[in-house]
Image (cartoon, rainbow, N blue to C red; front, side, top):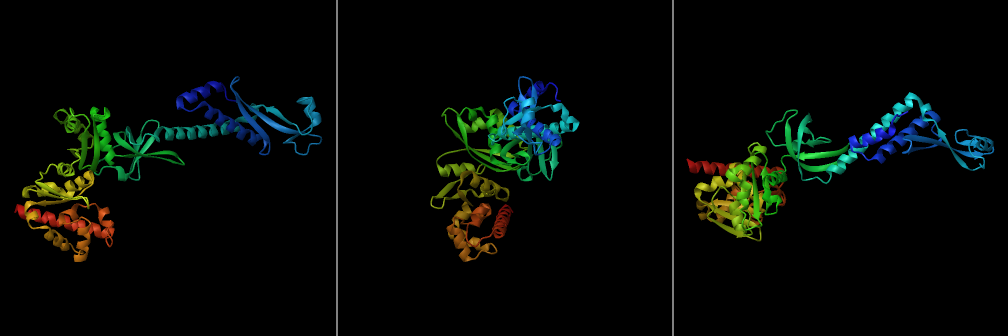
Length: 419
């Protein structure tokens, strides 16, 4: 029925990378299904692969009885003694080998379908097992197709998916184009493994540097923290473990070659490389690069820093739409209040009062914000939304509205100074 079955099993196992046992079990199950199609659903049958002969042997079992009432499952003692076993007694179960060639073309087709399905299931399990421990790795693939805004990526034996949320804004791809991404998650569902890929995850930036900077894989330096606004700007904090190795210089590379390779992969995303230090004030000051910092006041209890910069450095420290200081907050884990020298001279109470310039913030709410480390318009403009949500009485919509108003006020103040 299936010529050269042994060779086919070995070849299929080699080509598909599937265990021989899985294939033989699929064949046995297929033969049982085909046999029942011909012999009936109530028959007691078993199928076994004979490795020596290279064939699937099917046996039908019947119980020896004095009088046959159910021909499908019973055999008379007289017939059993004559054709199968001379010592047969009522109650014995005897196996009768079935000629599989009698199943016909329909049975063969059914067997093939089941085998194909079992092999597909096994392949899916293999893919899940292969990728489940590969979270956090970089992978290269080719854009295969687009589904509902997601990019389906051909990874070779498997497919990955880059959902819209994991795609960098303004990046576009065509079918067949190479795409590099980060294995963000591996899920198992009814269709097998779903390999979720990302180009926006902060760890994607980290993984790219690990490829470009040998000192990272050698353990001479490490990346302490990463913050990104994908496609726009990213910051990484690096620490040296060997006093003879400059961690920032290693990541930048000769004439900027290493960091430029990462920038090119991210289609122009700007990267700031920050030296990590246990001195929190120095760390935060570096994180606000490229702005220069004059002095820092640290509030350990609220994990807040007030950073004073020269008047002409305020807009640089805050960045466009608050981006620079927002990334510094993500990178360091500190709340950062940036002021220029003129603002600092106006005393802290002015900052407290300035919060009430925001529509919806009265004296009581300003006090709440102040007690939560948000002491000025500048801090409100750059604070993470989650910090505001945690304050009683502040909803998601309100938080976004306040942040937008604060950014607008800062931009207007900056423009007025320039004028």
